[in-house]
Amino acid sequence: MKKVLLINGSPHEKGNTYFALNEAAKTLTELGLKTEIYWIGTKPVRGCISCGGCVTANNGHCVFNDDICNEVIDKMNEADGLIVGSPVYFGTPTGSVMNLVHRMLFAGAKVSGKPAAAVAVCRRGGATAAFQTLQMPFQMVNMPLVTSQYWNIAYGREPGEARLDAEGMQTMRTMAQNMAWMIRQLNTGTAPKPEYEPWQGTHFIR
View 1 (spheres, one colour):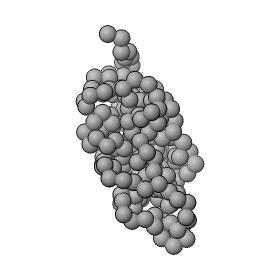
View 2 (tube, rainbow, N blue to C red):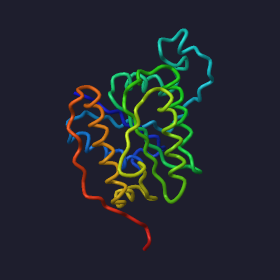
View 3 (cartoon, rainbow, N blue to C red):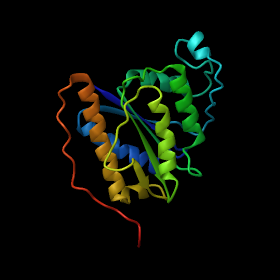
View 4 (cartoon, rainbow, N blue to C red):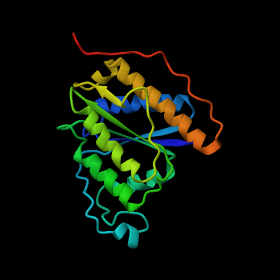
C-alpha cells in the first residue's frame, strides 16, 4: 500500500496546521493510501552546516544524530509522497521545519520522483510567502509538486478554527486527491483522474 508522510511543522501538536494536514490525511485514507502525521515537537532542530558528512561518510543520514532529522529521513525513505505543513511566523514557515527540510533533502533522503506538497496555515497574512518558501526545496530535488484548486492555504487563529475555513479544508481534500492520483499515475500510468467537489468559496468578512 502506498504511503504519504505528512510533517506537522507547528510547535503546537493539535493546532490549525494539524487540522489542515488531518483533512488531507482523511481523504488520502479514504482513497486507499496509508498516512502518517509526524509532529516535529518543540525540541530544537539543528540547521544544516553544509559539512557534507552525510554524503561522504554517513550513508545518506545527517552526521548530527541528536534531533529528529535522521528519524524523519528513514520515514521519508519508506514513503511515496510528502506533505509538509507549517504555521506562518512573520511571513515565513517555522525555523524548525525549514531546518528539518534542508537537512533531510541535503543528506540524501530518497525523494527523487516522489510527489510533494506544502501547506501554510495563518491567521491573516503571509501565507503565500510561507507557502512558496516551503515548496522551493522540493523543486531542487526532482519532487513533482502537487497542486490543488488554490494555493494549499488554510486560515484560523485559535486551535480548530481552520476547520471553519470551508474553502481551505476543501483545498486540502483536493490536494490529497491530486496527491493520490499522482502517486498512482507515476506507478501505473493508468490512474483515473480525480472527481472534484463543487467549489466552496470562502471569505472572512463578518
